[in-house]
Every structure is written in structure tokens, then in C-alpha cells.
Image (cartoon, rainbow, N blue to C red):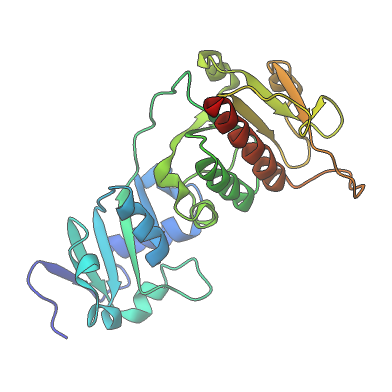
Length: 264
């Protein structure tokens, strides 16, 4: 199929855009250096469009371009068609997707002092970070604050685990704990050994939940800032929960409590 006028065709491995896509797919921090985000696959692309995001570049494999739906063909400011074998080199997936979007990296938004928030304290695992973003969006927490040392929020694995949640959240990353001084909502710390039981606590709403490092938990300095300390009952006897699982339980309980208070 001949590439129409106005649509670029990439057939060289050394193309600058293709080089950037490979970096973005393979290096979790590359988006910070390049100022771009690579969304691979139709699910993330649809999620971005649903939130009103217009891609800078839409990228399609040559074979997919032959039958690409109009909604994809006209989605971006610029459209690029890449030879199939070359596009596979820019994939971070086991089964490479035939399309993706390049977005300009959003500027870091200002912290909203009264927004229901989740604070990530040095989380290392990209899957955990993305899962917590997904839970935050699902349960009404509109702002996520990632302290320095936390996994890069726009990295490919975090994007995939977030399943599109990124585009419904205010994401503030790479800040020091002092940035939390701006928050006017109560800080709620999770713990495996102290505090009120979640199922018995009267949770403040709105609030900011503190979710800590997978092995060390919330840092002592950050825990000292908390006005509430919460632990989850585990009748099965396990010592602790995965941080993403704990976050989902706490954020659901907190969101439900907020709804109940609003309706009373």
C-alpha cells in the first residue's frame, strides 16, 4: 500500500524517531530525557483519547496501516508508518503491538492541597506503582505524589500496569517529603504492626494515604507526619501484604467511607 501524502514512512533502522522509541521502550527513565512518552498498543491509546489527550505522533506498522480504522488514522498531529520488522524493535512487549502513540510529556502539575491523594514513598516495583495508580483512579483519589526514589511513573511497565489510569490523575513525581507540607488533608499511614484496624477506623475524607517501600514500609520520618495510622486485619496469619494489594484495600475502604459521609 502506498503511503498517502502527509504520512511519513520509516524504512531505516537509524531513523531518529525509531531510535527514540527504542529508548522509550527499554529505558524506564528515558521519557525524562526525551520529553516524550511511548504508548504501545490500542488499550493505552484508547485510554488517552478518552481523556482528551491528542498524541503528537501516531505510529502504525505497515501491515496494520492497510486496514487501520479512521479513528486511529486521524488521531494524532502527525502519522508515521513503520516497516513491521522495524517497529518490533521498538516494542517492550512479548507480543509487539502494531500501533502506538507518542505523547509529549506533560509538565508537572501544581500540588492541590485539598485533593484526595496517594503518596508513594520509595516504591521500587513498576507493577506495584502502576497498580496503585489504577486503584487510586478507581476509588476517587485524584492526585498521586511520588517522592524521590519511587519508580518512574511514566515508565513503560508502570503505564501498562496502570491500564490508562495515568490520564485521569494529577501525577507529581520526584519531590521531597517537604512538598507534603502543602497538603491540608490528613495523612494516613499504613502499617503492619500499629494503629487502628481498618475495618474499625473512622477514616477521614478527603485524606492522603501514605504507601511505603515494598520491604521497609513508610519511612519513619514520613510516618511521623501522619495523623492516622492504619493496619489491615489478616485472619489468615500472613505477616504482611503486598503494597499494591494493601493500597487497593485501603483506598476502597476510604473511598466507600467518603461516599457514606457525603450521603449522610
